[in-house]
Length: 419
Image 1 (cartoon, helix red, strand yellow):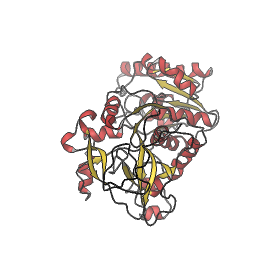
Image 2 (cartoon, helix red, strand yellow; image 1 turned 45 degrees about the horizontal axis):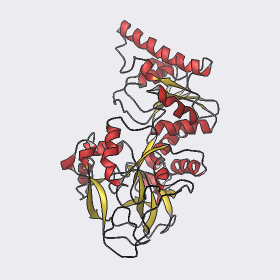
Image 3 (cartoon, one colour; image 1 turned 120 degrees about the horizontal axis):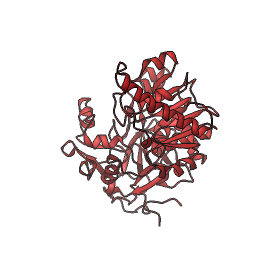
Image 4 (cartoon, helix red, strand yellow; image 1 turned 45 degrees about the vertical axis):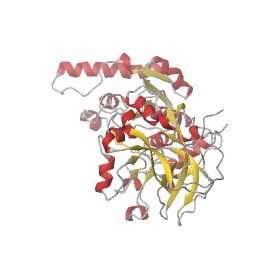
């Protein structure tokens, strides 16, 4: 059953309480938002605060969406900390005047206003939002090139302002995709950022598109990214193997389609590579990496290595990922949650012709393709926990402390908890 907002008020006001839905199409002058300010940079429970600000105007290519629910991602832990980038200061250097940040890079909601050039959505449409934005008039974009390579590319709700942790969010029209009818607001809000990211990683780098029977090693198999990658790989008949931190997560991963799981806590060779001239240290790493590779073979019942390794821990795991991926295979990485200074033994890259590929979110085509799978009930959003609007800082704190539950989290904004 879809949770809804409070029935739209018949009273025209310039500010509505959180969860109180204005009449359809009526945009009040002000709104509640969870703001980050430079003076509050720090851990999430300190960084976020509910404040009232003006509702943003929309340009000709923009859409104003009344937010029903917002997804939670690590990028706004970074925004709250002010590291590695002060997103407020960066935008001010680019000419923006706002001295605050409204985060949130996933949302479900209802269209309340559209710009003069918008034709793909109308007021009243129920949508989910992907987080890729760019200059629609950039020469490279107009030429039909992938907009993700244009210098104007930004992540909405992190690199841009006016994200989903507010009653209204401003987005570019192309970001708005149809909401899956079978999902409630919070379920619909949860998976798009991680799911579209995983889709590009697994299907966006030919010839290494995932195929039937491919072995795919998925780091963080029980997390937001990993849960999407496992389902996407399984959907085409591949054989995903999930790397987990606790055996209790194995059942969750196998239900999503993993053919087996490896508990990384059973190995201790993680981290940056030792100097190649230090034979004892290198022998220790090689022994650990070989044991990890054997765990893959044991799951498969044959000596097959992954054709694709789905990476995001980075520093601690890249050396092992490069070691275990098959000759001619690809390690595709979208983050560095354990650090950015990852070492590579170049001998494996050139002699075994392995590929180390960076990947970042997704373009329209890939985002819509992922959303189509969600709408077709082929992808479970893996919503694990739902928070109230006032707990925006608290749920990010769980993520900051690595105490968040498996799967994805969401925050109720306009939507109310299920009865």
